[in-house]
Image (cartoon, rainbow, N blue to C red):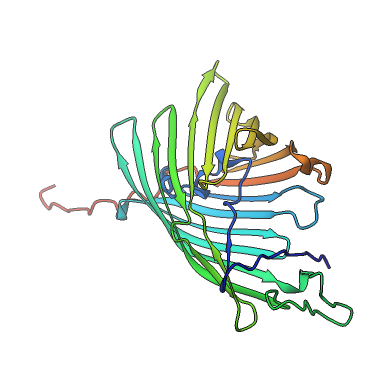
Length: 324
């Protein structure tokens, strides 16, 4: 069983820990509903995406992340609806979240559409105390951390979550801004009945933009940029992907943290399996010192597109006229 050491600094009771930024994915451009509820329903059809990420493969306790979401238009209520599930495992901690999204869709004119979205759900954080090791602990006959701030079993807590986003699409360009973790109070974990470990959620703001242009009749190119900040650290992704006959996709992406910190270069590839399923894979070449202790990062994505319009409302009532 893997064991992890958790250093803690006692500042006040209940103990407060600031949560990290939202998980990141290299193939963000293929899964915009994962970070912006404003885009929900804009495709005009039923869509679903499943993505799994193995970050810093080979490093003990490294993040393992997954996202599943489905979304569709539902014009009876003036917009689109969506559902998502997320998992993030890091060492002795596991984060789970689920949310429902709604986007109010506006057609500004023939070329421009706007989505105003809101996502609400819950967030659960679990801490498995049996995987922790303290310097003064005793573990020969069981789990005894000899530290009142460390649980000896698995503990967990729940908190609400709210995200919001705005998304704009026209024939050649799309742009969106979203905010995650609008409720700062995160889960509270009861350590031993007298000590509570409280997680504070940092508000994350994400901006995304993508354009497309054609090269001949068979190739389309889509450059994209994503910037995410928690107002302490800023993460930037710059990508370019090429599509051949809407069948094959190849791309490259760069990710950096702050101005002077290079994180990874990603190689992307994808194939349209049939008229509804698309499969993609990315491999991250780690540029930081973590390259010395890991084997890069792997990400795989499967998306579904129904391929026909739905959710446009009920057909008009038939009126029978006896004169005809």
